[in-house]
Amino acid sequence: MNLKKRLAFTLMEIMVASAIMSAVVLAVLSATSGVLSIWQKSTGQLQSFFDSGIVGNIMQEDLESTFFKRDGNTWFTVFYPEEPIGALAGKYYLDTIPLRPPEITFYSRTTMRPMISYMGGVEQKIPGNLCAIKYQVMVKSPFKEGGASPEENAKQPGAFYGLYRAVIDSKSTMTDFIPMATKFSPSSDLNYQLIDFWNNGKCQILDEMGNYKRNVALKNWALGSQNLLVTNIVDFKVTFSIIYPNPDLDPEQSSNVTRDSTSVPRYKRAYIPPGVSFSIGKTLTFLEASDENLIYEFNHKGKVPIFLSEKSKSRAVLAGAEISMVFVSDRGAKEMRSAMANESMTEDLFKQMLGKYASDSLEKRIDFIGEPLD
Image 1: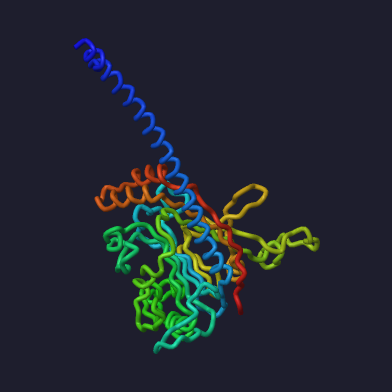
Image 2: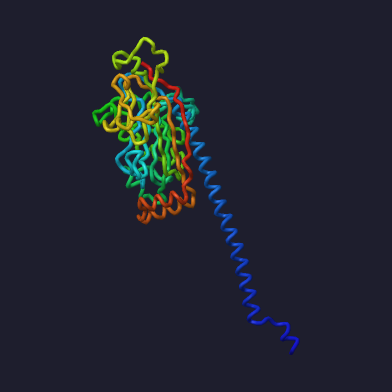
């Protein structure tokens, strides 16, 4: 009996052993949790860098090959819609509210375009290289077609932020899109010509099976799953720059012109910040008159606002674009989707989640090659 008593554990010994084991398990779990947290953050950042690199390269290919003509039609439009995109509702880049993303529509000789059709089961090379392109951010399900309004899209199951790139093949662009777009202008303002047609017109498109379909509503098709470029993007800003002949060298625009103007630069550069809607056709046009007050340049005084004369606008050329993107991790996207589905997402909660799950601002600089043709 004495031997059996000596071989048994007392209650106190069991409690002490349990406490030690619990401490060890908690320490291991804490270390594991820390490692998993760091791993998730690192993988999220790597995914963000990867996604931004892919998006940046595609946009660079498209924008470097833009095509312009000074024939009175619109060839390039950056438009900021009135409707917020999810929690992105700010109007100007100086707002504290997250900025609405732009809809960017233009023509490009991009190499990243549909090149083969399969009409009648026969493979045919698509002639030409000029394509109509549209970029836009939308909150919607990546597996469903776009609806008639952002509110409808946001109510789709699994809806979340995504960047969409729609490309009309070169044949449809030349035979259908351009002829119809130049006649389609419900706003009776040619400066809205391009964005009006993308949002309200119908056109022939090449579907994912390589077959042509006629009278397709472009607004819905542009947001189809086949046009999804990247998801989890929660901030998309683009700053455009233009160059124009220095008015100080033009006697008609400046009284400061002197004979010795060799030290004066022939061209000046101005910046169009995010939030400013504009179009380029025969001239550079700001779609809202108040937006022109936000244009700025850099000189010896730093960043200063400027005013462009009508002559400067008519001779302005797009010179570059600086793209800024912010992504959230998959874990952050899951929490955001849950809050959005429960209609509990607020501006403050959105900002808190960005601080917790968003990547740093990832930027890409692009220089334009295309210039307007007379």
